[in-house]
Image 1: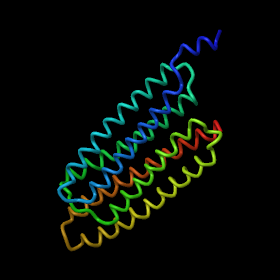
Image 2: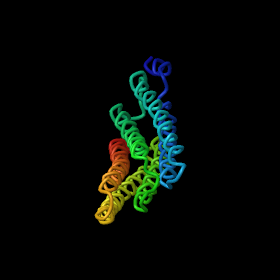
Image 3: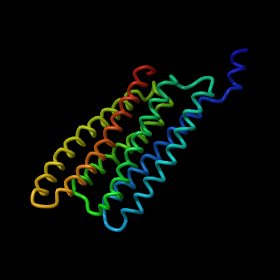
Image 4: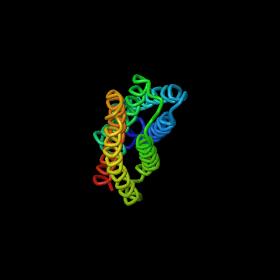
Length: 214
């Protein structure tokens, strides 16, 4: 009787395509942000793409949160599903904030270390888009998932190093220039660091799922 009732309820498989779509959107936003940091007259175009993609990701997040409330059986704990999608959404939210700060300050030239941080963001997003489908069979892919989470943590650590190095260079060059250049640059560096930190949070959530369900 219970099995018949469960078959009538929304299917648990809906979560995995939603996670995959969200991760794909996050990756597209990371790539647009990286192109934005090439500077020049393309900044506004790629900034608008980041904002649009963040809105698309928000819609997917809403679908996941609705699914948690309406699905009888979920593939893993409802709290874990909620925390993972929110961590992923935080990453793209931070990308949007970065893009908006760049547009607000009318920055069109970027330091090499800013672009290096954007490269790290793309690498992290690509890891997440590869990791998410593996959650559908956690037991089989636990080792792979753990390795990807380790790589995300390493990217976060490397991002911190680039951030600190970039700020130091920025401070040195701004001593003889406009102090506002340092303030604008620091704002962008800090936003980029928060994006990378958000991916480390994603890694922590994936690892939590693996520990509980592998």
